[in-house]
Image (cartoon, rainbow, N blue to C red):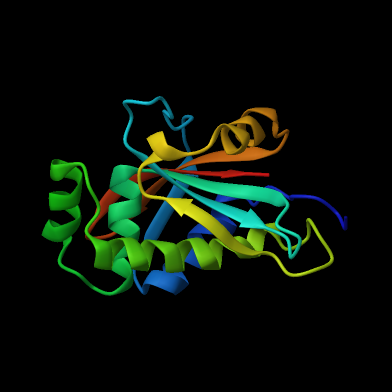
Length: 160
C-alpha cells in the first residue's frame, strides 16, 4: 500500500466536476446517503489489479442521473424522468460510469499499482454484503451535496 485514501476537499471536487462536465458545479458538505434496501442509490467500486476493493463512489439516484445527463448534454428533463421513474436510462448510466472512472483519481494513492472501476450497480439494493461491509468499516469518507448548474442537486459519497 502507498498512502491510503486522502479525502478530497469540496473545492477540489467542485473544480474537477466543473472541468469534466463543462458547467458550474457547486459542492458542499452533505449528509450520508441512505443505502437501505428501499432507497434509490448507485455505486461504483474501485479495485486494484488483484481485485482488492480500495474505495467506492456512492450516489443517490438524482446525482447519478444528473451526472450521466450532464456529461453528454442530455436535456435536464431526461435526468428528471429517470428519477421520477426510479430507473436510470442505459445511455445516461453509461455516462455516469464515465464520471465514476474520473472519480477514481481520488483513490490512486491507496495502492502503488493501477486502480480502476470494477463492479458497479445502478440499483444499490443489489450491492453484495462484502461491499456494504467495506463501506461500513471504512475510516475515511466524505459525504457531499453536489449541484450541477442546469441539472440540479444530488448526493455523492467517496469512501475509502
